[in-house]
Each structure stands twice: as C-alpha cells, then as structure tokens.
Image (cartoon, rainbow, N blue to C red; front, top):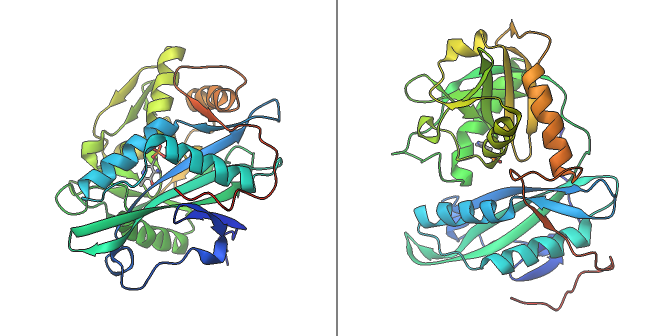
Length: 315
Ligand code: PMP
C-alpha cells in the first residue's frame, strides 16, 4: 500500500511545528464541508547542488487568492509571509538527494455557511525523486469533471478531487495509473491532477479552462517554452477520439511535471515523442537553473545554515 510521507515538520497556526501537532477540530468547515483551497508548488535543487528554487511562486499565490476569493475564504497571509513560510519549511526539511513538493492549504477553521469565515495557512512538504517521469499508460474515465455551475474546476479546492479519486480507483482496476476526465459535453477536460496536452499536425493543443481544466501554471510554462522553440500552441476543445489519433500526448502539472503518455485506452501512441522530448529537455534545464528562460521564475531559498527551524516565530 502507498504510504504518504510523514515529514518531521509542518507549518501550521503561524509557525513550524512537529507533524503531529497539525490537527483541525472535527466541527470546523474544513472538516464538515471539506472547505479549503490549496496549491502545490515544486522546488528544485539547482545544478550547482547548493541553491534551491521554487517555481512560479507569485503565480501560485495569485491562484490561491483567486480560489479563496471564489469560495469567500479570506486569505490570512500576504505574499511575503507566504514565501517566507514556504522557505522556512523547506529549509527545515530538504535533503540533497531529492527535490520537494509543497502543499499550501487554506483550511477554514472558524465560521459557518460563509459567516465569520477564518482560514489558517497550512504547509506540508514532501520529498520527490530527482528523476524525470517515465512514460505511462492511461485511460479515459467514466466519471466526469464538474462544471462551472457545480464545483467550478477553476477553484483549486479539495472538493474538486472527489471525482479525481473515483477516476483513479476506476483506473487502477483497469491497470492505469492516471485517468482523463471528460467534461459535461464529452470533451477532454484534464487528468486527475494534471492537464492534457497533445500534438496534432506538429502543433501542441490543450483545452482552455472553460472546458473544465484548472488554470494551469505548467501548461503556461510549456506554452512559453514552445513559443521560444518555434512550436505553435493552440488552446481549443479536444474531442475524446482525437486523443486516440494524436501524434503525442503528455500530462502536465507542477507535481506531474511532463509525463509522456505511451498508450491511451489501449490505443498505442507512436514510439517517438519528438516535440514533447524537446520541450521537456528545455523544461528541465530551466527549472534546474542550467539556463534562464522568461517562462520560469524561481523563488530562491536563502542558504541559511540548516538545523532546527525557528520554533519561536509566530505570524
Ligand atoms: N489539473 C488539476 C486537477 C491539478 O490538480 C493540477 C495540479 N495543480 C493541474 C491541472 C495542473 O496545474 P499546474 O500546472 O498549475 O500545477
């Protein structure tokens, strides 16, 4: 069985605390209604092996604020506090052999039906391998992405992942580690934790957010990289059957990174994936600081001495 990592430290109630101290009361809306908004941020060791950079932090914070605004959740921190908290936690946990993924969640800890709402910023961070993802087999789920008038996909809230979980359970039974969700019109929305990009006629195609995809930061990064490589990117709806005849498919997301798809619903894709291979190579160089690119900004962690975090700091 897959076990979630249990790192030593979390950021909770304004400071770095031991993992076991991060608990919510059973009566709060975060528990009773699954009320939260969150972000996943990825941090990479730079090629010098000394510096560590977190990708697109201002964009993640801006999306967290948009999600919070849509669900009437006041954001308790400003950008500087958010960045400092992420840095503190990573500095407490990072180790040279692995990169890190940070989950930043605003949990609603006080309030009722939208009155008196108070949220707390909670950060958990996990170690991730430094290796690039291997090609995978995927399927199209029978479950459907919610629409903008049900649970808006644009809002990054845990509630939106109920259907993703169902799709993953369905996928496991069919031998797939990841699944594609269609939208209410039967067209491609996204993966369970990533966006879908495909190549047709040598052009990269990905659905717009209005098709039921998250407003993805990674697809924006990939689009910008493509543009600099002279590869055209089109945002348009994608039919299910287009996936079966695509020249290339990849899944794109902060945690997923760029995952090549080799088979979908038992339709094998061409063995070579030249466009996404080229884009991936550039992506890795940019996130690891081998080269600079306007598509990616990195929030660099101060190289303060490692050791126990500052347990006394309360924000
Ligand atoms: N869709 C879903 C449902 C996701 O969870 C993610 C990961 N955040 C994405 C798409 C990709 O978004 P991003 O590139 O901003 O990580």
